[in-house]
Image (cartoon, rainbow, N blue to C red; front, side):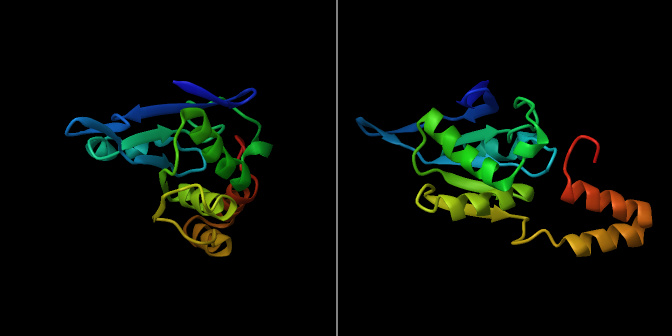
Length: 167
């Protein structure tokens, strides 16, 4: 389904598992695990089916970042870490999620780091997977150049510095 997080901006969201568990005669809330995918240009499907097995322990929320996957197309000018980080908060507000466990994978880890910097009280926990504290752009460009020559280096630089459909 698509959820409108602000006027004209809809993110694709899929949820596995109930937000509640039975504890004797009571229903108690389960934690919510919100998964932030890699990219740019990827979507949430890389998390499946592995994270499905956690649906009995937590409500698992998959979503596609703004302008990615099955979320609505958005102008590349909106593809910023600040916007993606704030979208996590907006999505949680729309879904009624409080204090999620947020897992950022690869590029999603960059988003998650910006999210925790901008909204430190929002998550219950933050998990970073296969990510870094910086892009390491010069190292990446050098490796692309070593493996594919100057045109590969130029393409890598364009992709990381100016992400858009052409790059």
